[in-house]
Amino acid sequence: MPRRTVSVPHPNGDTTPSNFGEKDPLNSNGDPHTGAPEKKVELRKKVTLLRGISIIIGTIIGAGIFISPKGILKNSGSVGMSLVVWIACGILSLFGALSYAELGTCIKKSGGHYTYILEAFGPQVAFVRLWVDMIAIRPAGLAVIALAFGRYILEPIFMPCGVPEIAIKLATTIGITMVMYLNSMSVSWTARIQIFLTFSKLLAIAIIIVPGLYQLFKGETKNFENAFEVNTVDLSGLPLAFYSGMYAYAGWFYLNFVTEEVENPERTMPLAICISMVIVMICYTMTNVAYYTVMSAEELLASDAVAVTFAEKLMGNFSVAVPVFVALSCFGSMNGCLFAISRMFYVASREGQLPEVLSMIHIRRHTPLPAVIVLYPITLLILFLGDIYSLLNFMSFLRWLFIGVAVVGLIYLRYTRPDMPRPFKVPIFIPVVFSFTCFFMVFLSLYSDPINTGIGFAISLTGIPAYFIFIHFERKPKWFQKLSDSVNRSLQIILEVVPTEH
Image (cartoon, rainbow, N blue to C red):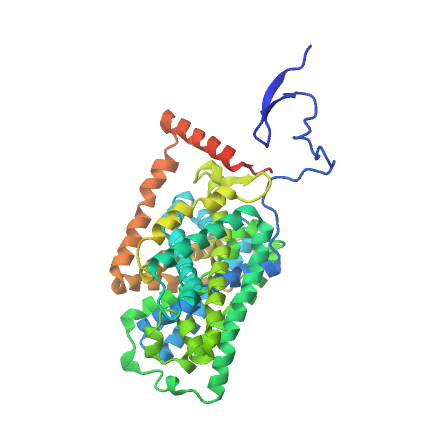
């Protein structure tokens, strides 16, 4: 009886006959040329302790410390209160990071906030979080960091003049494109470059801290006189000061987005999180003290680029190098952020809440290519709209609302699933204090910034009808299913991606 042959699609896109019952050299367990075992198409465990620390520090220390001092001082009202806000935000972020360390070691899935809300409260709440992330929080976050990159990278070229806005946005677009390309090409190179950029930004911080402390020891303390004047403190502005500070610390949760790629996550995640947060808190506090040894509150508020103004006053011509360091720092923050959030879209697609193609891996690069590039068009759209501080306040409100929900999920799981293995467990008061503070800040923001808060709530609520239309109703029209399948197939061929092998 003759063997039956069918056409089998090969990885190179060709369709050739394959005999059932015979070994296909392309689909067997060995390379047809070398005889070596064929590697599975999957995301591999390539995140070590050093790489984990570099992802957290490299993402936290981005634009925040160079932009946010202005926002914090303006909204807190005095030098002393601004330093209190920096320290308080550091402690609060540490509480949140410790809570996420527990979540990451007991729920060993990538995806961060999305995964934890899904486990605790089910697919409806998780989808609302995902929806807001995709259409607002993540594109806005990338746009804010990228705008800082664009401004600082062009600063030395245009000194002493200001940088034109269109030039900043063009440089920003180039920066976003480079980060997207890097993350699409290689996980290993993304991690190596992240380590290099992390050391670069710590060097940039040291260039500010060391001369600043030298000035302090010389007796330059006039800007710290009357630092805690009560009559200048604006209580209604404090939530916005906290938003600016929390934005500067944001990034402690990004390692939780790549849990499945972390080596020995039970040990690596808590260690990486704790080491990173201590380093960042010390760096941030010392940097702000250094700023105030050279600049008065009025000078700091008048500056568009605080770190550059500091360097001009203290270092003269060497100040040209500071914007380059800051731009590298912002690039590292973009790189770490995109590396992490692409895994959330990858996991959401795997859970059936995003198009199937987003959970596919490139056949040679082993990167989640579709999940990496999905934010590109939305980010560019947001980039050419709006003001950086409006984006910052709008994004912070949404981010902390849902992080508070995720940490409430930790408390909820303690009672509903007490037998769940928890290799790392924090005292219950830590997630209670953290989640309460998140919701308190959100509540106060209704008074301090009702317009941005209202926009945030409105965008969140659009996730409810979106869930029922795209996810809940399984009997979709045939034309819609055919279109969806056709788009998925076409993108799979164009991008050379396949489902993960288990």
